[in-house]
Length: 82
Image 1 (cartoon, rainbow, N blue to C red):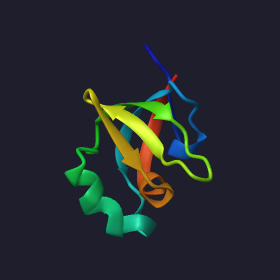
Image 2: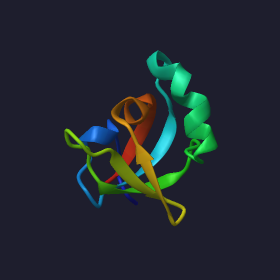
Image 3: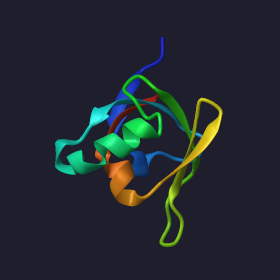
Image 4: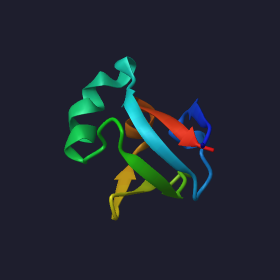
């Protein structure tokens, strides 16, 4: 059985696998956009590229690549699969 650890998306290394567990209430304005992107609770993702000064975070979700800005990524409550 894998151990689950709650963390922020920006703290995960490239190649990390995680699950979306919800949305941060502070960033509630992003919830509709994230839902429309398919980032629903229970969804598994893989970190493809981490954010830098000029690049967004890129996730692989259900075989698709999704690009997230830093505020969008901070709106997600996630758990990392260890």
